[in-house]
Length: 321
Image (cartoon, rainbow, N blue to C red; front, top):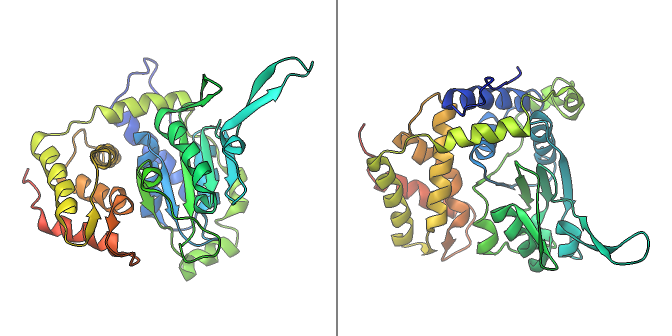
């Protein structure tokens, strides 16, 4: 399925709905199962956000990122996290000119539409921090000069479980830049059969055709931003944020930036469902993937942050529409 904008290129929610369906179908033609996680990634792409993939190696995180890049017709780059990785290895650096006189900027791998930062928590904190400006502002500053990265710009970063050897915990300022955090999980037996027989998997990547262009995607992103958010639904989102801050197991609750990300993701979910307004259940769905990785808990028990968000969703009454 190929998506195309109308000749006037006007942003409309219906156009974004069509694009979202095409992106989902394209990725599911390669990645076996995990439909719900794929929809979250598509929602982040439409909302202009970045995704943190928290999982063990070998479950399809790289393949997911490559398929997204191919489907939007954009460029793809991969960064492998390691303890000796320097910020200049990621964002770029100054290099001598060919004639030996003066310097020029040599772009790093972040200058691509889709960037996979593999094993981000194996990179040292200084290199992790180098990502903050480019993820937030879409540009890199080197030697007093700014260099914009291609638009659209999406970072999909993977994080190994913290108990694995050679990992650095991600700072709160880093995790807060990711709109959503998801786990692909292991494939089921039926999904593994699809991969082993060649009906899904890396062998299908070469068959992926672009369903849009970066320019058309930018127009659809503008349409997503126009999706209506009613006052009661916005208040519901605010009450969820405050519930995380008041929770007994939380040391640092969700920030205002977390609320902005949650609402942006909810707008994408609404568009993907064919609606021009955000419903309370869009906020609830967005909260499940936009809030847990931002919470700082009193203990580091695995899965506790997800449980806290579920408890907050049960505690806060959703508005009736």
